[in-house]
Length: 302
Length: 232
Image (cartoon, rainbow over the protein chains, first blue to last red):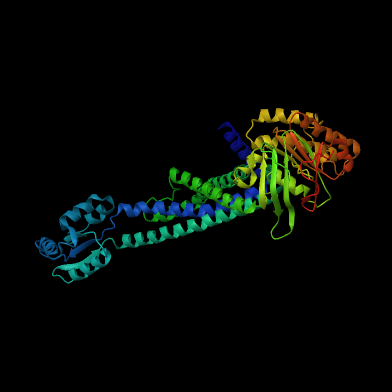
């Protein structure tokens, strides 16, 4: 056991020695991989920062039926009842929002209270909100229902509240798939870079490998420093990528801050949580080791 | 054909060796070497001496026949097991294969690192090996700074540091002056006297006349004398 540990320690120090022997080329390789790895990290940062917005808002479509301001008081409950009786299976929940309740809610909001104070009466109509039941083809069914309600008596306008959230969700789904493809492309970049680095190292260490085999080194002993080289390069690239992504987020957030403030909101891009960053470094190290293993097996057959 | 001893340290039975579809480098080789023997393998250049030694060292595999070294059948060994055989066989090739990017002592400690010895143990044994071959005090020298004879002795130190049961040596005195050659041959004889089975490939007749207790003559891949016969 001690012998095995000593061999691992030897392999690790050989790796560090080889990296240090060519500092500029080692650094260049690591930076190439780091830049490539920083892209999915940045993409992940954007996705993870935007996702809470869609989580806070229900993505299940809600239909809001606005009545005419002149509609009688009993029109709203009648419409709610009609929705339940005619489309009971399509909707999960129906509720009536009285114009007085809506006005009271708005008055509680300081942004609106001053404006409402100068109005002579209540400009708001009664409304009926119907939450759609989950199921297939939700968006299409909601749109069809909304079109039907639009023709009902006393109905002024039917609004599909979650349209924009649906679009954002679809956009994020697209971005998520894009990010997966980007991740795969970056994995190929890491694999190719480590493969080539190890190939060059193996050719440079040809004599040492031959001598090690001559004196009884196992293939594991021969390969081990190269596996460490791949893993260490991958891990260092992962760490450097986190640094690069964090640096790039600074100007991006500065630009975003102005945009968010113009909407009266606070929004900032953040790096993914620590466990995802650790996982990213570990994946980069594993990719490096796997590529090194492949390369050293192919390039030390002499 | 000679009777082969079953407790031989090295045993070849009907061994053929060829590369691809080329001619046989070795053809129907049969011989055995007992533990502690000092044997010369002689013959002209290209006769197959080096190939014979590489087979003993597990650096090549026979195309046909059986090679037994230190109790293990080479042709039946897995690729994973062969390195362990090499640890029991000290190999000194004509080209010394020294590593010029490290010191003399680092060259000698390599076999000990391979077998997982501690740094302190490896240093102590490497110093002892260097001392044994007359290179004490040259531990920190780069092999490039050493003379041809010293490089040869450094290669010997590396081959013996793991205390092998068998030592195989290919043309150890080629390009060396007589005094250096004698000093190196004396090193081999010293090892042999403590029980290390030693095979030396050489075509230096004077050297064989001086040291040989047994010589296997090989020509065009075949033994030209009956194997196992004492020639000197």
